Length: 443
Image (cartoon, rainbow, N blue to C red; front, top):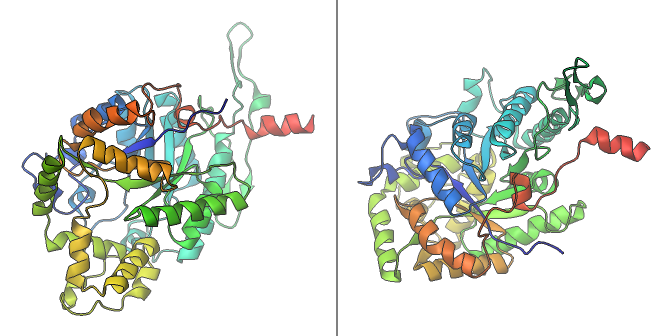
């Protein structure tokens, strides 16, 4: 009997906040982005709310215009390893760029996190796009956008191959016979490709879930093709249900054409719920958030989408400048979405910056109203779940205490974790070792 479909929930750990102004809230700890205590509290709250996973985003370069959280924060796998020790069930997903890492190191790091956590690791596969990053790794420039995804495909293939270096029962541990491992169940990869040459094998065994879960955030055409082919969970950032449905149907159709299993991959839009016990209380919280923001926040979002381009050089109240070419060389999905909104509303720099600084979205209101919106997206081909941002201090606790029980009462969210591993709790199958599968097929 197939498992009843449930909303999947992730929490993004954003320390001092997502925007340029969140840190200014009176209740915000300005050291939160490097506070193990803060992250432990957030992780345990999310686990109490039966969230599927925690997520740590990343960036490999900063400058004076970067948002505060990215200026001063933990490296993803380090903090996730620490959180593995203070949680029991929740998945642990970290971003690691294929543009500036070696597959062997990535395979070791995530395999280690997987073992430390008892099978709860996930890898958000990204290609770096901020141009300053190249200089941090001794490179003159980034690869072109289309080439980044060719590198990503080979990198991921190598990492997944290394994760199969050992068969599941290769560790014998026969003390009397003096046999520690069965050498016949150890496999070298011997990969030689256009971008990587990796011999293997990996010096750590397979985890209880077989392999870490693969996440991606494809939004450009190349990105969506990559996600449809490789990802098991996909992040996205639609502004409303209509945009979410368009993305959802497009990506599911691409995956289906590639022969992916029905329903793959899971698609999780970002959501920043603002919850009050009443609609009026929630509106007061939204106004509290809005009062924190400045034009700098919106200009920061604009700059990041266009490779840190300085929009202050333009008349903020004049026509929006022609920056389409810059967007093509940076974050194509974000820049394209902004340009489409600018054209549709004939917006100035100041107007689009204001919209970006405090987006309202569908998820502001009483617990029932927020639950209604989440359910509407979930049941109408807008989402398989959501990645939750904490918009204001205390909002995660309000969501867990007020919205989660409503979703559980409606049968939309688990009441208890069903399984031991992240992959199983997501409803994904255990990934069998490729060499075992090949031997069975040959037999």
